[in-house]
Length: 215
Image (cartoon, rainbow, N blue to C red; front, top):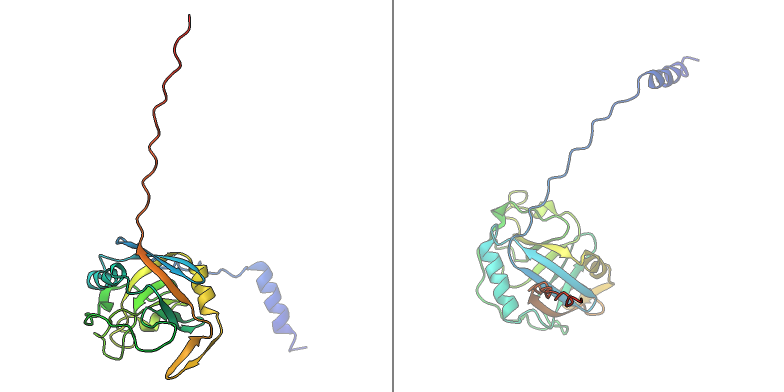
């Protein structure tokens, strides 16, 4: 009997005094990109990203130079890990030598842009200031990649505006190993074309001429 009493008391207490739960805190809003918009056409669909020119000016300038030079056209997403990220922009489908790049850039990971789902960041080696052309798109929230959490961090410089479903599709393809490279898609995910997005001007309505008056 003594074992049942606390349970009965608990039911009575819950009936007379409903449990009050504090509202969940609002998530911190992501900063909106204020720089160029870039369209990445892939063999699995289109991804549109906005760039944070104000937060990562060196990184955005570097990325745009590669875009304008056509560096990414014909490369692949060569490293794909579900719930983590998709990485590309350096290799062709044969996975031979990495495409030539310009000198590496300074790491701007102190910019306070977090590596959350949908963020676009520069890939690098263990040297914080070694990023060149390769980039990755986070599939999950990768806060451990932010500055100060586990070191110098990885510079997030953009955000997916459209096509996150395409990113998820790429992240889910079967993978294998090729030479020293792991997590390589079995069927190459091609980056066919990367270009700056220029919106078309809205059509100007032509003035209508009223019909002539009739007597």
